[in-house]
Image 1 (cartoon, helix red, strand yellow):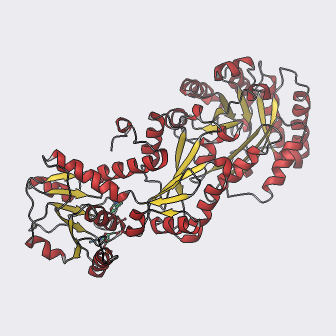
Image 2: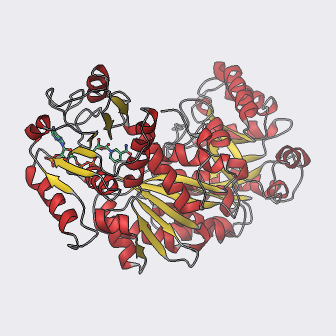
Image 3: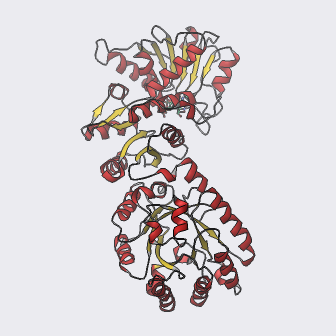
Length: 554
Ligand code: NAP
């Protein structure tokens, strides 16, 4: 389908665009005349991975006195329809030459047979600098006659520092200029909310438009460009790329399923700070794909306080065309998740209410939000599986469980296992926090919902036998406060009748698990818990269990 569109109109004019395809462009910088062959090879590889267009970034090359022949060769031998760009230093490029050099590069590109599909001209150049503006307008004038052998003009604006002032008036200016075929605006996103502004520009476009956000917050705008009718998105042809945040062509086509994104694609996010380490996008996007569920999940970094959390989620859920359907919420926003859903008039489910934190926000059929805690389900499910693997029935009722730690994971684990009938002892470095959890859970209502949870000192664990021991401290975690350490005293009884679980998932085999395994205990790691809680999130959002054979390996 795409190939046909491109072949039907090999210059990728707005006729090709009307096929409804958002193209994948790779920008390839060509710094020197002797880099032409290598650059053409890079473009051929990008084409084989699925790119539709190549942008020859001849910023530095344009300053070479022998540039013309190299530029003509790049264009003529380009394996894909191409854009030729001489990007100025002021807009993030490498060109610092003279106006004459830039004009000469444009003229060389235009003389190629066939010529490039497009020449990119910065809005500032087009309007502000007379000789170049005239040349660009000359190209635009010829191209506006729709002769098939002239390049069209992409009018562009870039701001690498952040959202430019007067963003919409700049775009309106580009749309209204009869000489440009495409308007392009690219800026560095300050937060995830900038993506929504890019989507609004695309949705209200007066001509084919490229609106993309750069940087760690901008990935959504790159991936979801087809949902909003963007003319193209950029991908990296190699490890470098030309702007922060570009995925590779293979990631875009393979991992993100770019070709299948359309208006109906639903959007989810994992909201945390920091968020770059999260495996949730990989896990959920694989499951969505394998289950044929048209959705994508993005990592959304939100600064660690209530106001930015509230503002971001309100904007994501409030932008109807985005169809934002749910969030996996991680540190440090699990309590904010409850507050947000409560303030929006949604439902706080019992798990989240009792634990005092939610890791999942979803939307019910009636449009109301709900907050759920699937960490508790994740602990219980991973434990039950381990208990069954050890020959047991996976039943927690009547079992004695020790929990180390009194943070968010410990609260979820304590509620999860105690609400299934286990007797829980909780111990923590800061003893008062363990005591508070025990009091809250045991005294929650003074009736049948009271759970068997008591707080004890760590030293007391060695005097008792436990069926299950769960580490919910950060001890042993890579990069954490006590990496490679074992939080469990050596005297605590461990043998083949004990199941030891570590919530820490990096490294896969913690010092605690090594210690427990050496004593014959049955071990389960944090990865199993992570996948199990993610499976419950998937179910909360889609109504189905995930296709677990599509789960990525740890
Ligand atoms: P948290 O709320 O910050 O709690 C951290 C806990 O670790 C507290 O009890 C803290 O004790 C204790 N701790 C920290 N450093 C310690 C040290 N040097 N010695 C003894 N205790 C120490 O964090 P969390 O959200 O509960 O997460 C805890 C761990 O579980 C993390 O490694 C996290 O990655 C993991 N986790 C895994 C999953 C999963 O799906 N596998 C889900 C959630 C969390 P104090 O109260 O005395 O500070």
